[in-house]
Image (cartoon, rainbow, N blue to C red; front, side, top):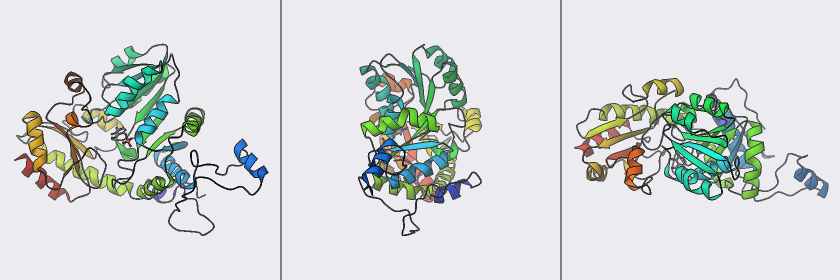
Length: 393
Ligand SMILES: Cc1ncc(COP(=O)(O)O)c(C=O)c1O
């Protein structure tokens, strides 16, 4: 195995880190499409199961292609350990459930992706794990939400879909003061622009389905943290419950990591140009982009993020009808609820990702009827700006 060294820059790590070469010396990482492995002797098999021999056993908990993806993700994030899962939601659910038991309490930001909110608000309480939602931007609400039973704090930043920010360093300190851990869903920031572990979080989760794949092909998730955190909390949970990433998906995602910096840098530059072109347009009521000085938390963006975002959120005048008419007039930007793709995608959160919430709850989350969320792709920036301006009319 070629171990990454600290001396390597990000781009170099993303091409080489974690590579396992077979006896054939292939240049491109191999796809080990196998469920299991054979052992030379029964003694070797016994040693493998006892953990005395580090080889692979069974694809529910370890596979060479998945291991390469995990090692490369750990090198990217600066984490000691990583575990891959079948989807981003499998990663979020496992990262939370693996740490709690009946009687515990989980404290989370209200501004969350719909399925993450379902896990916190609906799923955990079914198993006797209480949960409280707070305004993620308000540190006093985080402090006041703590209980003696609080084990985990959970947040995403920037948030889906409004691109609100949560002060990760401050919330990590609050978690530490309560003896709880902090899990951060870093999907919107991408590993390039924000490093929650360096800001004091205990665990980072990704939907690899988004920028990590970056070409809309397959689902995946990943959980990262210290070796102790992953081994103590996450490894056994995944091994025994089975939300494993398929080796095929791991192979696609592993190869995609080679181009992640190129893609995300380009998408971020284009998103910033789009945000500048749309801000102040008479059909745009409000625009949210963490890289702009008019973002309500611009100082925090500068402090905890290395760059803006590949997403832009804005409210189109005319509420739902105005937003729908605008979306239907777009030619290059496609209507889709996904994000992080090479294709620019636009969604109307109130009728898609956040549809299951009552209107008042949606309003409290900032998901208004006119709000659209644009995920910027790899098309030429001029074509995208022209498409958006023409559709705004
Ligand atoms: C912020 C955030 N977290 C988690 C997920 C879930 O990821 P997946 O669709 O890979 O399960 C998504 C997906 O849209 C997301 O936007």
